[in-house]
Length: 151
Image 1 (cartoon, rainbow, N blue to C red):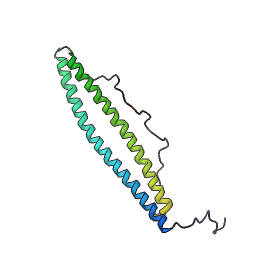
Image 2: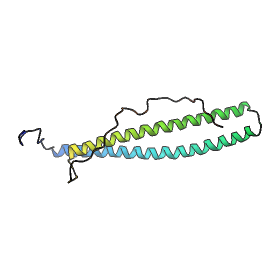
Image 3: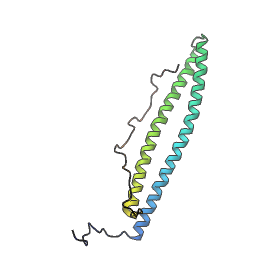
Image 4: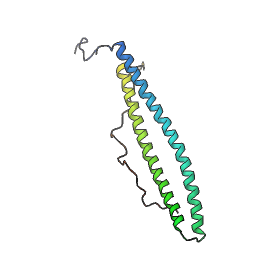
């Protein structure tokens, strides 16, 4: 192909197109930063939940170890702990979805930067990490408390 071939030399993007591409990339990066912040908040909430879960499970275990019968009230407490385990499953699934979405958004932002804004790297092409291959890492869309051994 000759050097005048449009495939070899794509037309330069207009300043407006470059501005829009840069703005879109900024929005995508802001979204990834928001997802990272959401992940930190979720992690902090999970730590509090785990502390409460272990504390309550330990207290309930002590009551049962002392030979107390499992009254309807104690059974209700046990069921509440099962719900806490379900919430922990939610945190795990949410973490996977956040990481997956974050990677997909970063891939899009990197592609925009490379394709619309050009390579900043003087040594060669900009590196764009591969996006996720699967559309969704978590296929479950609801949670049920299953059989969980607490003690």
